Every structure is written in structure tokens, then in C-alpha cells.
Image (cartoon, rainbow, N blue to C red):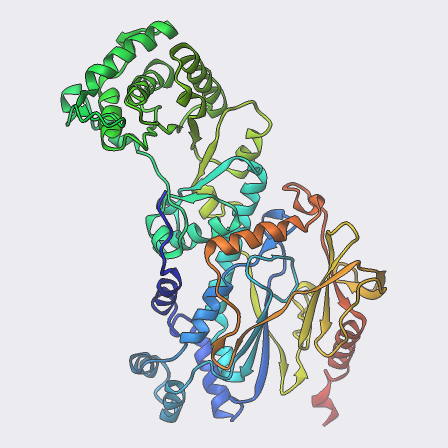
Length: 554
């Protein structure tokens, strides 16, 4: 396992500047900014909110991720001369040249961002982020902020579900880089799956850039590249105990292989010589990190026997082999047989290192197959997951949206024929209500000017899942979820490492009742509007209906 880089924050900020320049946006953001500018509205104070409408994967919760990248994006946001010249080439020729000078001077010094901390459990319809500032600027930020939050939160939530399916003890290895949607998708996945609960990644760049612990073994190609013991070079290994005399590791391993075959009643004629050569070659290169894949040919007839022989030779030289990887077939059944052989060797040859050997399982693991591991008897210590983790095959998008809620201190609301697509107007505060057992049971969305709810005091509110019903609840504890994150061009909260945010995720998940964390058919978590906010929504709806005939009135 590699040590985290000491300069991950600086690397991350440089990465953001390169991956998310201001031109990583939709063209209509720029055309709207121009229209605001032409009408003189570009400096009007405006507020947007970022939220999503449904929890992913049919689950009961979501993890909010991508916040740190958003802050670094805001801090570095500006158009270069080259950016402006490109926009000049794609906007209509009649565009006022002064607009391009306006763009050249834009930054986020007038932007304020308030948000729920990264790594927090969140729910549908709760505003995760509030972005306030000059109308043209905060409009231009929309696409980039959505891009930074959508996939990060989705894959982080997916990782948390895999962690719940695996249980707390089993180690999880993310190895999806080769299956990810491009290099950026792979790097983002490695970072946020670690935050969501995975222990290691195979992605070396993620270790360098984000400090994620990296791990890996060998591929089948390494094993199949060998055909004969003649290819093993060098053929000797020096013992750990200080004796500098080189030991013929091939001869030593052959002796152990005969003893293992005798112990297990195996047929030496079925053992693949090329596989043994590969194992020996790798063990000579990495005697303290020997963990080969043993299913290139036959686990029972060749791979397991070859591993035991090489591992016993290493143990005789005072090295400690790590274990094996299984990558095909019935992983549970094979792991039981592998562990049985390990215990037999430990007892028969008095080699205690065989009692702690690790069994890694990798074979197109899904959330369902991960959950099934807990239902079947098996001896798998580490599970490697790739495709179904990083591509989020159950649901490819979280569907975050960024909606205007206030202009010039006046609330704004989108009223849609589809009620689910209507928005909630006004600047807001968000509070999490905790019951007497320490579990979160309701998120209350209020107008920012309202007095906050108090512990032990009854609160009347309107759950978003109901049309008109008012309920009263009494929290034992109240947590204000929103924090000031970015003000006057500066990040106002400490930037956390991936490991620190990962710890926050586990702490936040602990506050959820198990019924909300069920992978199948979880109970719905309640999100509600305060009485004043509900009244505002009702008034705007009614006002919109009354004003629909304004043309006829004239």
C-alpha cells in the first residue's frame, strides 16, 4: 500500500483548473449572460439552489460529494484572453464587443456559497447548495457545478451501498479504472468510492493526487507469459534472517511442492509449470508482497498447489506471503477450499503465517452478489469491484438540478404541470431533526429569516410527500446543516482530505436508522417545509394563476 501524497490539495486545485475551465459549460449559459448584460440586469443579486429530485438506486439516502472541487473551481474561476476569443468566434457577429471585455473581468469575488458539508447523508428535494451573487456570474456557474456534484455524489452513494452490502469487516478494493467513462471518470470514481467506504484503489494516480491507499496484485497475462522454470531469473533469494548466502528458491519450492501434493493427495502431473514459474518470478521480485491470481488454469489442480509451495518456501526464508486472488467460478466455494488447504498446511507444516493469509475475490461483482456473500458461507477477506461500481449500472445519473429561487430579494418559483418539477422559492435554511435515540428522522426546510427549530419544542411542518397535510414533530436535537463555504472569493471552511471526508461519511451514516439504509425497499425519509415556506409556495401558486390573464387585462 502506498503512502498518501503530502501535496494532495495543491494537486487537486491544479487538476480543477485544467479539468474544469470556465468554458466547460453549456453555450446557453453564455447567451443568457449576454442577454442579462444587454438589459442591464447582470449585476442584480440572485440566488440559485442545487438539489436532486430522487435518491439513486431505489435507495433511501444519498451522499453529498464534490463540494471541495466546487470551492476550488469558484476560487480559480476567470476567463482568459484565449477563452474570450473563442467565445467571440462562436457567438453571433452582432454581439456587442463590450460584452467580451465584461467577461474578461469576471471572477467569483462577489459570489457566496452556503452548503451542506461534503460527506453528509442527504435526501431528495433538500437544497444541498445555495449560490448567491451577481445574476450573470451565478448563471454562468450552473453547468460546471452540476458536473462536479452529479457524478461524485452518485458514485460515492453507490460505494456506500456496496459497503453496506459487504458489511463493516470485509475490505473493499476499487479496480474500475479500465471500465470507467474516460480518464476523468476513472479518477473521480477512485476518489469518491474511497470516500463512500472503499478501502483501496488500484488507480495509482488517485493515490498520488488524492492520497487514496493503492493496492494491486498481478494479472492473468503475467501468469500466462511464462511456460517453463527456465524463465525464472534470478533463481536465488536471500533469507530475511541476515544470512547473505543466496538460496536456490526453485529447488526449495520444488521440495515443498512435492510435500504439498503428498499432503493433499494431488497429482503432480496436472500442475502447470508456467504458472509455477510466474509465481516464483513474482515472489523473487516481491517476497514480502506475494499475492498472485491462482485461477489462470485450475485452482484446485494447479494454482493453489503452486501458491502453497512458493509461499512455504518464502516462509522458510522468513518472508510473509500475503495471500491469493480468485477471479472466476464460484468464489464462495473456492474460498472455502482454499482456506481449508491453508489451515491444513499451517497445522501439518507448523507454519503460522498460513493462518492469516488473505483471500481476495474479484469476478464482475454487483451489489446483489456482494450482498449474497453475506448469505453464503465463504472465506473471502477482500472483494474487488470494478465495472458495476464506477459505471453505476443501476442508475447512470443522479439528476441534480440548479434552479433560481430569488432575484433582487424577491422569491422566484418554477411552476410546472409536473408537480415534481416545481421548485421551492426563497432563500432557505435546512435543519436536521434528531430523535431521542440519536437518529435523524426529518429534514426541515425553512425560510432563512425564520427562527430555527428548537430541541424539545413542537414544530408544525408540511412533508413534501403529502399535498396539504400538516404534521407536528418534536425533536430531541436540532442540527443546522448549511454552512458558509465561500465568501468574497475565499474558501471559508478547511479543505479535507479524502480520508477525512470518508470518516465524515461513516459518521453521518451512523445517524440514519437502519430502516432508511436498507438496500431493498427502504423506508422513505421525511423532508418537510416549514409553515411559512409552505404558505409562500401556496401564495405564489395562487398568484401565478390569478396573473395568467394579464394580456386580456390590458
